[in-house]
Amino acid sequence: MSVRISLLVLAASLLAAHFFRAGNFLLVALCLATPLLFLYKRRWSLILLQFAAYCATASWLGTTLQLVQFRQQMGRPWTAAVIILVTVALLTLAAGLLMNSRCMRERYPF
Image (cartoon, rainbow, N blue to C red; front, side, top):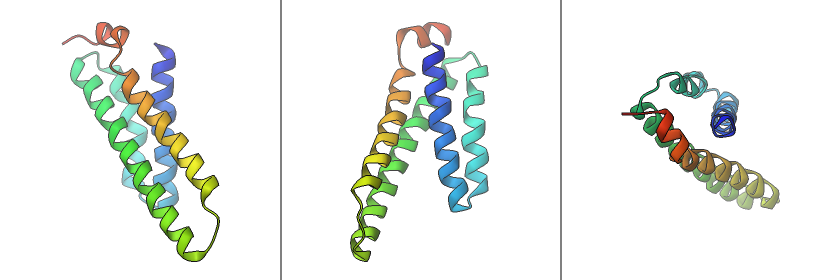
């Protein structure tokens, strides 16, 4: 269970760093506050965490596409950036999927 929580905290921290680099401090605060939903022992908090992870995955994939297009236009290499960002997107997706495991559902009742 702690691995599942740690993975989601890591994913939220990585997304916060992404938004920090972009200068969007409101989203940084939101990303850093998201893991606090683990403190609420209700199913809705677990569903919200899972939804946030899926939205973060979509954000990473969108960023990947934008970066590839930009680097291709500039004639710069882009494969290493794609490997890194897709890995982060997969980590975030795994964090969201693990929120739906049996042990998490048992700990967060309706």
